[in-house]
Amino acid sequence: MLCLHIASIGSMKHLFALLFLGLVNLGPAPAMAAELIMVEEQGCYWCGRWNEEIAPIYPKTTEGKYSPLRRIDIHDPLPTDINFLASLYFTPTFVLIENGQEIGRIEGYPGEDFFWGLLGRMLTEHTSYCGGSTEC
Image (cartoon, rainbow, N blue to C red):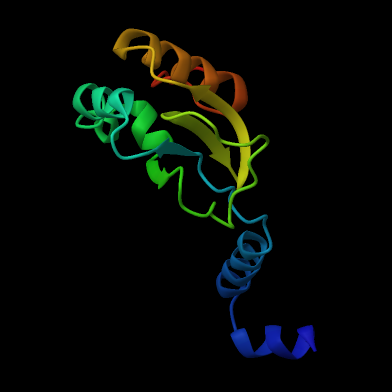
């Protein structure tokens, strides 16, 4: 069957192009990106502080681009697409997810300076995140 198909292509250039495309398509599926889940509740003082100090800039940071934020209310049913390693008791809790699996968490909000340090450490220890550096 392959011989008949090659004969109908008519040129080696097309054959190489088809072979290349076939190899590319047979490669593994790309891994899903990391996601940061913020578990919050209405009236949570520390959630409010995080919303004032971090939320406006988070999506613009390298951390925010690498692990976009997704919010869930602690009183709502848990999302079915996430496997949490432990129960959620505190707000805010920040859970790092990759491929639907929890890989790290920060319980509470320790303030802006500590948050960035803890998040950066969690990302570099548990993912391929390089902190904006081109050298990992």
